[in-house]
Length: 407
Image (cartoon, rainbow, N blue to C red):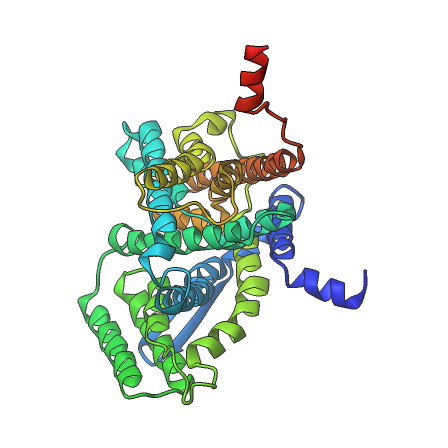
């Protein structure tokens, strides 16, 4: 492989998917080997930041989940703002099909999970776990089999995943918030107002936004609201326009600069820290537990059923159109890829449960459901490719049929 081809592969969606799979496999190996105690000790290592009486002390695992994942949600917020203002979600014509599909793709998995856990309110709190899609993983699976497929499929999958992330952000804010500190929430609100003032004043330098955004993150963390929401709030305040029309905007500069760090560092670290599932401590009953089954089937069956069903209804009613050049089989494959929850599902699972046994069941369901969804999506996309290559059977014309009938 030439250096140019290697560079292109490293920056491709396929490589990103392979890298995340490798990070998850390393976590599984570490959890089920002689190094398991070191793995757990590493994630439990305490770290603290203190400024006078203001202190944040957490184990390394929570610094990754609360701190580094705030950078991921900051990047998501930048992408959402760009797509809504000038991209794939900037008009009803562009956004209608992904919006309907994403709504169905969040509702049906949640209902499936609730069906498995309705008699246990303590575990029903995880209803949002299978409702999320991992953008990087889903695009990675699609990239592996997308040769010959229309580019509109990637656009559709990306738009659905972005809307999914918006839904996940709203769910985290409304349903996974601990006891609130109104004082800290007030400080966070003041920081957000200051960010808005900078935007309205036309400040184009990124440093003030990052500095104030970091303070907003700290206040949100201490307020009881999940700290990753500070990343989204900060991102939405970043200016979309540069000083001159030909200049890159602050949003574009931050998105371009942050993307490789999130993709090549934050997400693999999160996968390594959260995918560790110890099978030796896992009872056989865990494989058939309501949580594991609800998550796995919510991802594997609920996501594609909700996405494809809502998309079909929207097209049938004339509210949306199929992606250009795409077949229903290809759309079904992309719908299956939305069941690759992985990072986002593990993240929400960590918010929903503190119990180690329940978290292991969540990991089991997420890994099984995501893997099955990825394989099913690949199979459907490949099947659509074979259908396209298969020569159409010639059918006799009506005129020829009529001639034969007269003969």
